[in-house]
Image (cartoon, rainbow, N blue to C red; front, side, top):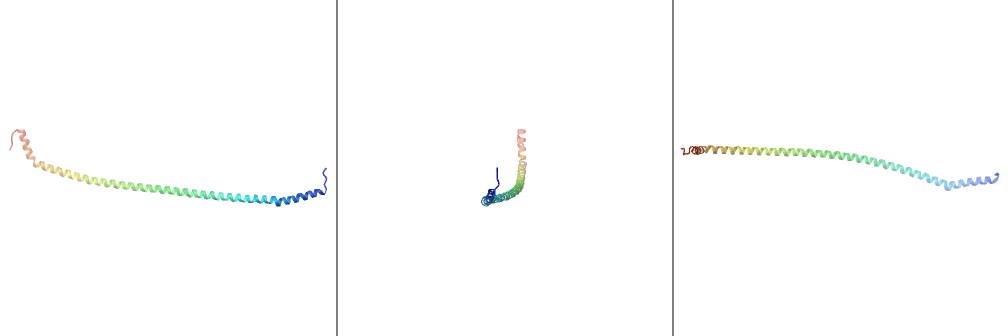
Length: 142
């Protein structure tokens, strides 16, 4: 059987002294390391959240700038397209105008040539009619 005597108090004193010594030498440093580790982990988490937030903001800014650049590109493309269409219309109008001027010049030349031919033929009508009459009659007509 277990008997209670003075050794129990010595063992209890040993146990308390051992707890105090272990607490000072082992448990407090381990708890301090765990507290520091927890603080570092929390700091890392905060840093990660900050970096993620900054990355998200940067991505949003990047996407906004991309959208703006696309819009500006479309606007510039439309402006260039409009300028090209206007230039095409101007060139077409200019070519049509030149063609109309050349057509009028050709018509005037044809009318002049036709008038010249008609005048020459009118001058030679008596000669032609006399020649035709001579051939039809088979004799000279005076």
